[in-house]
Image (cartoon, rainbow, N blue to C red; front, side, top):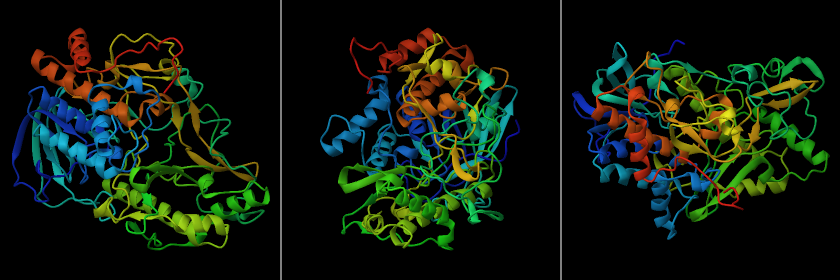
Length: 548
């Protein structure tokens, strides 16, 4: 599959100062591209193992979603989380005088990531992103990055700073981006969207015949003039019937931003309307709420937003219900998009959510109690200070997914396979947010939400974080790893990304030491090193144990 011009990166020295170095060629043992939680842990791991390492991140902040608003940690089963991933939650716990904290404020998470990088003297280049990949045969020789400070709202800049390119050479490369930018530019196979049920024999994949959760609870008319299809569809609804159940498509599960709000008057900033705000955009939300009222379903703010309380009187707000913070169907062009496309989609998501919150707080179409409850919340003065209180990381629930030596599928989650090269454990639900909002039988319906638990923690194989040998032999992919849409929905949790980041970096260092391609290293040696580092590679619950 052809890849487009891309990948994330920013520039700033280990002290994270705002000035860029003069153009220079950098040569290291390990280059980690993507400062997500998995990327930070990978870079720290390589440094701990004595390798020279550089971490490249397009944004201004290390930590990805873990420092970008996702303070309500999804883990499935804590017993499956070990190594430096578990250590992260222990270190965050120190802010709250707890052994571990799985709910936390974004700024505290970012502080832990920055301290970890400083502790091991990792060179972190922020505000830089991938421009080119130089490859000889099966090996990446170098990457060229370019400086591109994000826009004021955190969105990727459409264009880079002229004459700001920098070349990074390394023996081993890790793609730790959510998007899979480096793997794509390196010519590694990948997939975007949902596979057909028949592709990997996965009943939960593909277009869904039924979507019972996060669904409209009443029949809502989809047309501008109710009952008149010729008047056109309301905003937030897509054309078409959604496709044939079981087929694959290019739909990507919805993105949003995880919102950190507060009621504390001393820390609260008002939520004002975004530029170009038009209440007509939220006509579907109004009709949805009015339908709930008419059906005596007693709508509350909690039915429209999933509000989880965090320490410090703050929140991690996620999508909830039929019309919420998920901008359904508006992200399809993001995974393979150029920087102009991504910048537009990022900004559209911020404006949509900003407008939604303002509409809930001000529109007379919304019950007074919901308006009052929404108006009590505001952005935090002490969080995301360089983006006006809005999160600095969009929740990219899936982008590109590598098609590597092994594709993790529903069968692995259901314990129908035997994995002998485990490098970590997945444990969370096979979880897909809605992919489409369409008209069926004359009414609005959401399509694509899946929430089905695996049979318990399951191993993620080393083969799933390594490309096919003929495509690239010095690249590991711990985040946009090789998994189907539905299996990735279980794996794609921040603790797992950190686990896989540590395992990938350990394997990269071993490949350097052994002088071998990543596909040919001694797994027994890797396993021994991972276990000694506290990783959990298999899980056998004690009798009577319950899932965490």
